[in-house]
Amino acid sequence: KVTVSVLYCGFSRLTPVCGMAAAHKDNSSSGSLKWLAAGALGVGAVAFYLWQRRRQAIAQRAAYPVIEELFVFPIKGCRGFSPKTWELTERGLHYDREWVVLKEGDPTTVITMRNCPKLARVVPTVDAETGHLKITFDGDDAKDAGEPLIVPLAIDDGRLKVNKKHVVEFTLWGAKGSALDEGDVAAKWLSERVGQPVRLYHCFGGRDGGSASDTKREILPPGNEVFGADLSSIMMMSRQTVAKIRAACGVAEVCSERFRANVVVDTGSADAEYTYRRLKTSDGIELTFVKHCERCVVPSVSNDGKMHPACEPTRTLRERFSAPAAHDAAGKAKPLAGINLYHTGTGLLWVGMQLEVVDTGDGPVWTKAEK
Image (cartoon, rainbow, N blue to C red; front, side):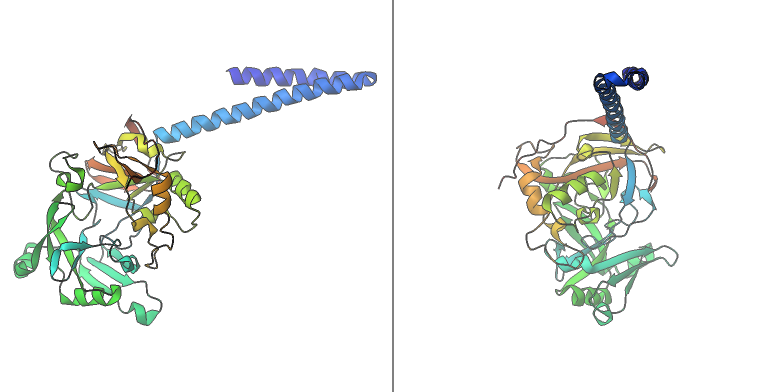
């Protein structure tokens, strides 16, 4: 109302002043000054109105973020794909991190981009019609890529019974899970392409993410299981935060996929997602904050399987976007990007879906990472 009144006042003055300036040419200097003053007032009022509308739009978007991208990473540590619609199951997005790569002869060692950057060139896609996971290699040429690897999507009781001796128990961040070896053909295919002896395993027993040792205490309710995710079922990040980090590090190739987020949202402004504590979908699925997502070197690995020479954007995260994580009682500053969430309820998520922010909290206060 105040803005409309100011606009009315400014433009109501503008008309008589212009008429006066035309009728009294001998007093043109005085009329011009009045005209300029009224015009400046009107322009200022319009600018204020537009600024206020923008602020309202940003606040509205922060309270009702919209999903812009979905990412599913079937094999932990490998490249993902971006569907428009995807099913959210009890353990996260369907097939997300359902396969893991383990060191040959040592199933306790999980292989990711941290210790094998070439995994970024391994590209799995889900073919629901045929019931298979199709895995290709983004090689330098057709000979380097070779033929795709095909493995079944499902693990039924018969397959488990026949291959019982090939079941292993693996440990990731202190939480144990069960997985089935996909066999020698898969191991040979993958090992030849990433340059080290590894084996591909299909998880079928969920890990209790809440028992992960890196948290030092349980921060998830009992029963919230995941497959190969580090901790919780969903990682969320905003497009604006990705853009802020990209601008800060000066590397144009830094994109949302680099941060391994499952859900990328439009929040209207950078860092808004750090304040989210509970969100809800229109179908009643609730997403609850676990912690701010601590970062390693993985975002610095490009899709060609190479580490950035200056370790960007990880270096910039450590220098400019570090803070004590919300769950860390010791208060040690760590590089952060995005938030970890767990969910209750199942259903579909889709690009364009609007989420409702039900509860908020404090965001991080940026400092430099501690060694």
